[in-house]
Image (tube, rainbow, N blue to C red):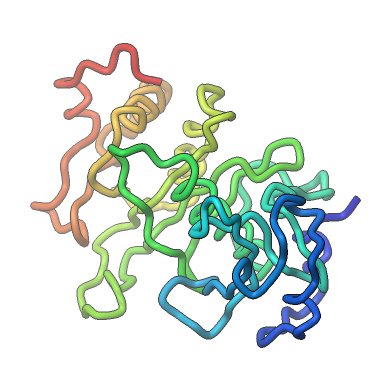
Length: 256
């Protein structure tokens, strides 16, 4: 069985309004308890504040802010199916390049993390833009996490002329059902290998679990102790805290 990501690989995505018969259809194999009508569907922007590209989403009446499916390629797809691939070559951290991959990234960030798995102590990640650098972590045909990076020299945001002074990992996420298996460490390793700069940033504030990942990384690669920094704002020298030094002052026992 092929999934949306596989089917979209060689197809140009058409943006725009969907025919009325889609909205008026009363049956949904995506979520049988949800009746598809004008009150249960709505367009969501794929790239956050930009209304240029929108996708039709299906919402549950018990949680009208969380999508349970998307309308792609003339049919409804459940969220979990959108996170699957039939391509065995898609494994490990893969850079997001296609529209299909952007849709997978959207589901992981906005639906899985923000709506389902984000704890009260965590902060929501910003929506990823159309050209933002990100990688999705694939394992056994399933998208299980992602991380994104602001390149050195890239603007802080669309309203500011300030630019990042070093590459900064500004988001990283692993689904709860896959945590404790080394996937966070795998993405941190991939991040470090992907950039050649002497200093690399991780966005402030880091969670204790992310400090634990950094501790494991530095125990394996002690030579990188001066490369990893917890970064505020755009990462000027006075906005950086050395992660290796901070770990020495922390009690990380019991964290996963």
